[in-house]
Length: 144
Ligand SMILES: [Fe+2]
Image 1 (cartoon, rainbow, N blue to C red):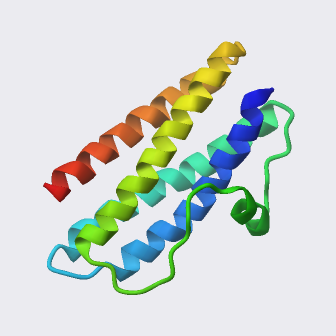
Image 2: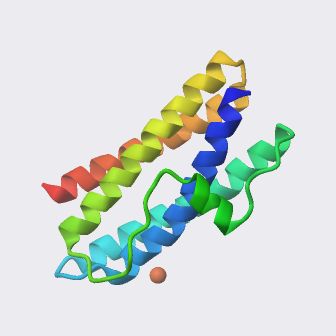
């Protein structure tokens, strides 16, 4: 089915973002350090849980999930960033870009799965979309 390919890309993004959000979590600097530090932790914990859920969803559909770091890098649509000091606004800008990519992708997967009658995937991805929307709201509110 068409959305299986999208699910593999989504899985790859979850893996890369787990690493990237740790990078921001460790390297954000400035007087709002603790806010961004804690916020990124909340998000990477959630993405890590979703990483397993999405891989297991693929298994349930009889599809072998991508399972190596090399495959994740090759298939991800989010971009990695080298470690350095990140200001709060740089950190939030990066977060916002990636959260929007994930929300758009989750929406596309939800809609494609719906066209194909795959209601399990629809249900799971409706929750993901809602969660990304909430995080994007938080980032916007912090950016002021
Ligand atoms: Fe930590």
